[in-house]
Length: 371
Image 1 (cartoon, rainbow, N blue to C red):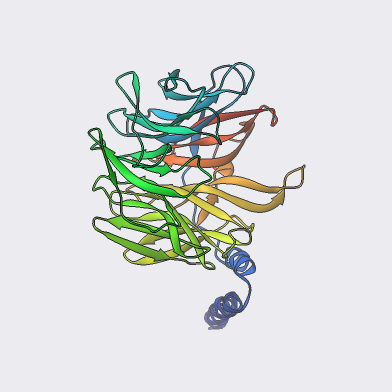
Image 2 (cartoon, one colour):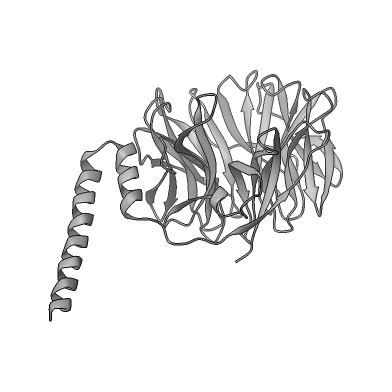
């Protein structure tokens, strides 16, 4: 009888703890609310990963952005003196330089589909004039711009070869206009007004996601399902941006205050609801990809600081039931600091970049589940 009474008392105490935590969560700032929930609701165990160093071209660093079902990975690597960068593809231990468009020096690959078609941009430098490209069958071609514009950048490609891109009047500092490129035809996505919009992702059904001005100075995540543009709203503050969409229509991105400078969180939008995925204990998190299994990846501040004073950012994985630092899920002694996770395929293989060799080298990585 005494042990039964003790169990009842413990149960009551546990319930009260969660009630108090919930009340505090509602009354505290978003940052401290997320920390409080993390203290009381540790996520269930997550699978672990083997890590593969994808290498680079000339010893000056590499960065991975996307991966397809065949484990072909794309991104970019620096050349020679570390100033120029070229789009690259990694496959089965090999790295291929995809080159650039004519009369340009730099290129970056941002997306790849399951037949190995690659998209990105090629230009004079990361911040200057550029054109979106399609790399297919060993050749890189210019996808063009919208009428009246000078520059463009392609961000993603789906299984049908539909490319989502953004057109700029002159350089990426000017207002963008999203468009879809398919079979050498450029079609404006829709009218977003003069303030501009940026498209970041596309799925197999042609749904497009990104960010657009909902009103002056207020940027909101959107989903375009032809011909309708849906404002996805926010979950933390009045700012949001969508980065990727899976084939089931689930969208991921980030949401924060109006200036996008303060506290913020990663989100998962599904079935009409935007869910706060939290952070790793710091002020901000950014969800960058989601697969059809609902596994979300990205990067988040963990509450620590780097030696030079900036917030420490680490790559994360989330299933909607918790957020895990990927550094805790790779073999001990790997000499890696995983900072950004950008892409994930249907086999839960993850790509991104981080520092290795005691922080002296930044390389692209590939993570594969081992349990």
